[in-house]
Length: 332
Ligand code: SF4
Image (cartoon, rainbow, N blue to C red; front, side, top):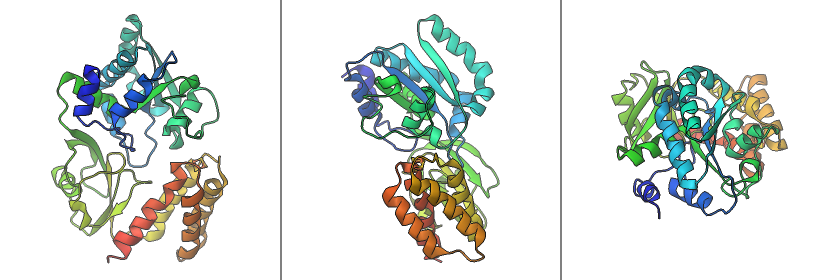
């Protein structure tokens, strides 16, 4: 095992895009493939509601993200990499980033920037491959996984911005088991914070000076797909999804909450499969068209989505709703 792979394994580094897959396993999977060229992709899409940690990292530590990409390219023995950018993000960082990319180009690395129309599904790793290849932006059937047949059918390593930042820290010996957290919603001090990954939700709220003085609930790991927890449950550390906490007032109108989630999903559904394309549209419409929340119909559609959606976007629609009912409504 190479030195850098040993360090990554020892650091227990996991992906920070939401899936928390062990980084060293991903590296091994791409390394063992025989086909060349191989590609490294930095996924700077960040289309989930409530997240802004990746743009924070890109604005403040672009050299670390590039360093992480270079380390991955050297490990795989390739010179080819792509930055997959939410186009809005690229405009914010291009002035600082472009000269750095050019510097790497002078050393023989071929780093290309791909600007995508901001979307939630554009961050899904196979939809992202389709986008770069100029195909319709929708997820592919897996397997094969990108590690085997990724960009242009070649072995491809895809990492989130924060993961690449962490790889650079591990290589430098400065990785301190911290993670970036976006804190938003009904708070006094919204922003991105950098705390030890063992911090509980409660501790993040206290130390970021965001602990509310009213009854509240939180949504963790993405403000569309993340689970909802009540005030007693925030003594847990954040284990799921990407690093984000949104605070909601417990008195919040439930129709407003459901509309926020369902409108987002209806807009972001890529349309590839019927349960999600039609289901998310109907969910949004049901909330809009009824004075009282039609729970029975909503739960029926969510059951169908859970069982039949093609990808995690459709499968994730029910997470917020079910956890809200279980943890907030049933615990009141
Ligand atoms: S679940 Fe939704 S986002 Fe995923 S493939 Fe189906 S339509 Fe597209």
